[in-house]
Length: 477
Image 1: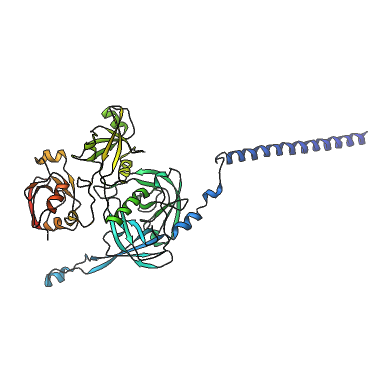
Image 2: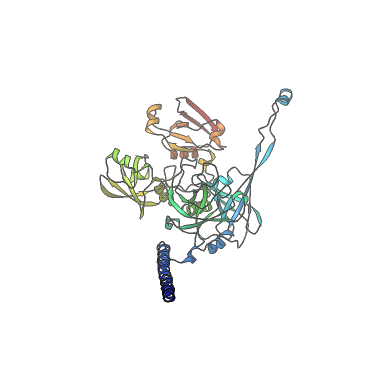
């Protein structure tokens, strides 16, 4: 009996063990299958149905662009600030010895005969400019022209069959699209970084020019010192921008970099090659971005477009019929939702070009045909080396506040003085010209016309913002 009980117990135990093993294996396998399925569903739910991993291979774009991006080196002479007080006591004032100043940046070859575009701030003040290609060939470069308003410059080297970058279309760039930045950060030549387009139409206020045009492409591609003037490239290897600036509390890369759109670059390059000076088209409006606060203040319900705050006397907008308080929403077929976008659109045209301006007035859409003008108030082509450049100054019309405070009813203000007749005669920035050779001055065009028709001396009357009246004279020879 005892033997039967022992055998029965062993058989029952063995059978229970087999059932337990079978159940355990079945449950574990089933649970694992569920977990694996969940992981796969989660992983692929993040990707589009037409996902192609080859789309994230940047080697083709890098190969097309890296050979067309050059290293730019500039040289200039600066006087030494060092002085020896003991030497000066016995021998008089000591003249500082010139010392060499060297700068570095990047540039992009845009034609096989050696035209190169870079930033104006890369070559500004340079006495000599040298360009080194990716194959280590070095050339001395000629400065064809530069444009402080867009921070662009055009160089030329003597070369044939050079690798060059094809033009892309920055208007078609979309936020989130991949781009490459190619340049020479910290003199590390032929460096390629990648990122996405973070935003478009950024106005940072970093270009020190009254007529600045800022509508930057913002990316998170890594840029550092030395990248200025380099290429922003789409995944097809086409040029879509010129890398210009970074936004950083430390001066190093911090995730925000900015490039001039290629639509602006192409216009500037074409003008500099053809005329030696950019043909700046002016709509003749003072503008503000439309915000919720502005809409509340002005009592309108539209939250897009650009608000016209003021009009230039005799300007394109006023002549076309645009009024203060209008909201500009479109230039030709392109919508504009910010001041930067409006400036970018107008920058594509030349004086004399006609554009269709769409505005909202009192809740209704209206269209106006405006003939754009130049900085001097007319539609003529301005070539480098003309009289206005000889004067070495830029001008802007005075505001109604200027007229009221200074008790004048006309005049133009002197801005951005550089080497020329005005600076030599002692005129300072901010000086308001009221008369030249006893003729009243109402606009920049008046300055240009009066001076051009003067054979001998030029006599200028005006007033400074502090109310001090001043007179200046110089010869044109």
